Image (cartoon, rainbow, N blue to C red; front, side, top):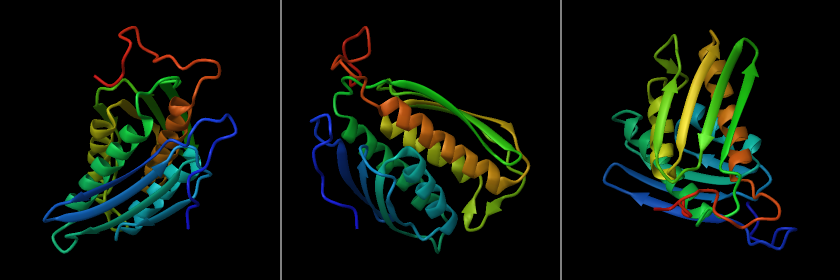
Length: 209
């Protein structure tokens, strides 16, 4: 069970948000706490997706709850897409006005032969460029073609620019896992509060419009 929110050591309130997305195809509940400890409670009905979202929480240092009920009897598309959208909205809501954040970050993470580079700009504008080369259509119960779609949905609703480049890799599980680990570490760096400033890191003076 994830603990209730508390004050950070710096005296800043914990940045967190809860989102519910309900359609005729899915019911998604997401709670995201940026000042977390890497704990997660994930139940999407898709084992490999659970594993990837756990990587996002664990390596990002976030506390993350995702509960999803979707029309998996059709296929995984609606569930994966709506999780990405709900997760992105939770991130956007948790960031608030984005004052004081580092904003931009990149990480390159290996897993054995796989190597993936992720770059993030929490710019207030959603855009994704995802270059992943999977060799098979499925990893467990997760269609590999839905991984870019998940990342694109996350970036769109999270209102950030995301670039993902696969530099090496042959094993699809390794490629996918190094992607989510790199995403987690880049997000962790980008959302971090820069000591000594509460300014919005933009010459426009806003990252929310």
